[in-house]
Amino acid sequence: MGLHADPRPIGVFDSGVGGLTVLAELRRRLPAESTIYLGDNARAPYGPRPADEVRAYTLESVAWLLAQDVKLLVLACNTATSQALPLVRQVASVPVLGVVRPGAVAAAASTRAGHVGVIATAGTVASGAYAAAVGEADPTLAVTQLACPELVPMVEAGQLSGPIAEGAVRGYLGQLFAVDGEIDTLLLGCTHYPLLRPLIEQVAGPRVAVVDSAFTTALAAEDLLDALGGRTPHTGPGANRIVTTGDVATFTAVAGTVFGAALPSVERAAVTAD
Ligand code: DGL
Image (cartoon, rainbow, N blue to C red; front, side, top):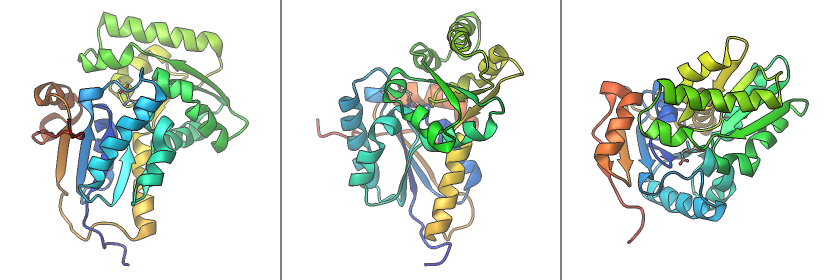
């Protein structure tokens, strides 16, 4: 197969709207590729759910994406990646990329002090996936994780700045740095947190590098397509379908803060029979 041989779209899954940060980076890096994004907003947030529920919902959502004949699946949700990636790989007939390893690689490359902080949902922290992945990238690094359950609902409500958002971010980062004051790299282990990035950077201060997995996941997708000879033969901008299992108007309002005017009209679909 030549390098440019597969016109099928890339499937991108998130529990909701936050994975659009990963989609935006993928489309920036691979503009000719078509993409189909599925947000399972009807059942979000996944972060506080038990692991078996996250696995079941992820498998149902992924089955919907696979039925759209995608050539590559990107799990843009940290909670789904940390709890369901091996299972999804078992059922998927196409390659599957998660966001945890790319994020961990970015953090390991960034730290100078050897101390990495990870903020994520309760489910992601409980899985230990980031600690394991950073350790795999460099076993000498110290990793401190903190669950930040207030941040996802805050972002969903459009609160990206202002006193409430600042109070929440200050509270969490204060807790994290109290555990390890030597942290010089803060990994945003949740799709929603890049939307709070200006505030997080301001609160963390100039000594701390803030990294996320969007850029490195897009890079991993590009490498994988090249290795498999799976890039699209088309030139020109690829199609961008965005689908939610939840309410289209609510999704569109929050999604607009990520994609701005480039947001295509959002479709609604059900991934279960009921
Ligand atoms: N997408 C989830 C994640 O990255 C955050 C939102 C949720 O809890 O569903 O962990």
